[in-house]
Length: 314
Image (cartoon, rainbow, N blue to C red; front, side):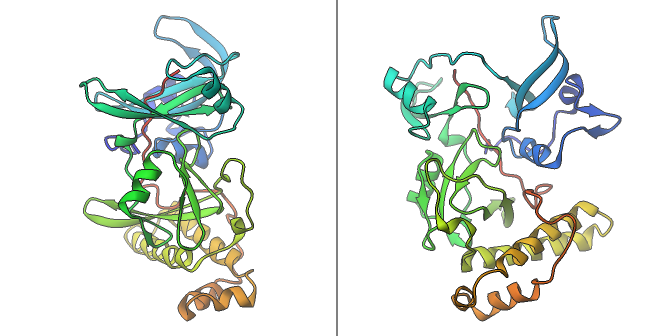
């Protein structure tokens, strides 16, 4: 959610690690979308990696992300570390709590480069075996999640890595180490983002569960979620009218239809809790059957990306 980061990928950097060839990025769409949003990818195997000092590594497993360096998007490579290095801000107990997964993050009060009081949120990434940190001031927070506006207090909590709870029981937590940038007790969320003076909608599916929690709410679909999902569909339909030959838009619409199809498995009693219009939308999508359904892809990436801040400390 780095406010200066746009969705332009550093193709030269990707080419240098063998991930951009003949005009195409050789990664799956989920990891490409993660890069566009400023999130971290899964572990990627890189080949013939060349360092600035001339050294070369035949093979390297690492997570990738795009970071802003003096207004330019650059590829960041986080390799897998054999041993966990001490973090200078963490006590021994805090170190163990993060590494053992007892807590999701730890907040520390610091002084920034300008001498101002600031906070640093520290997480542990068990894929690369290292600590990651971010400045919550640099996060661009959604104005609403699942059609529910976020209060200033909930926005503050989300920025600082705390779990927020919506009125329908949905729980959400920002996670800088997560490929989707957040975790929830729901498998999918719709974020409402204020971009360029207008409201845009972003559907994210395949969301990992909150640390230490497994809830029956995970597979349920709330009224707010379905209402926001309908807005995603409308947004994509408008986009498709402008770019009728863009197959990626059709794929994104199919993801939305798949979510409506999943919701159609709700019991009659659950459907009765929705508005008549929402229930009809679910029933109308009931027979959707497309080979692209089920892909865990964020929808609406091309125009409206979530962006992550990642000033990482080790």
